[in-house]
Image (cartoon, rainbow, N blue to C red; front, side, top):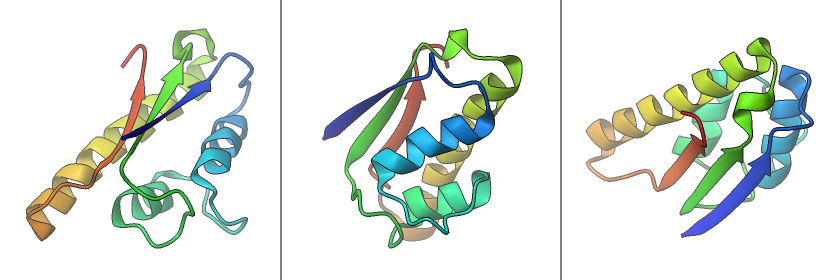
Amino acid sequence: MQRIELDATPWRTRDEFYDALFQVLEAPEWHGRNLNPLVDSMIWGGINELKSPYTIAIMNAERVSADVGDEIRHAVDAIRSGRSDFRERRGEEADVYLKTDTV
C-alpha cells in the first residue's frame, strides 16, 4: 500500500488543506472543496488519478489553526464513515485511508 505524508505545518486556511490533499490525489481542477465530494472521489473513485490502495497521513496537524484542524478532523471522520458505508453496500473494503498524527 502506498503511503503519502502531508505536512500540515504551512496550512493557514481550509483551502490550503484541500490544495495539498487534491495535489496528491491528482484531483481535477473542478473537484468540490468540501467533505461530500472528497468522500465521493476517495471512496467511490473514478475521479482522481491516484488509485487505491493508499494511505494519506497528515503530519503536524496539531500545529494548524482551530478552523483548519476542525476541517482535517471532519475529513478523517468522513472518510472513515465512507469506508464503512462502502463496506456495507459493496461487501468489500475501500482500501483508502486518511489519518493524522493526532486523530
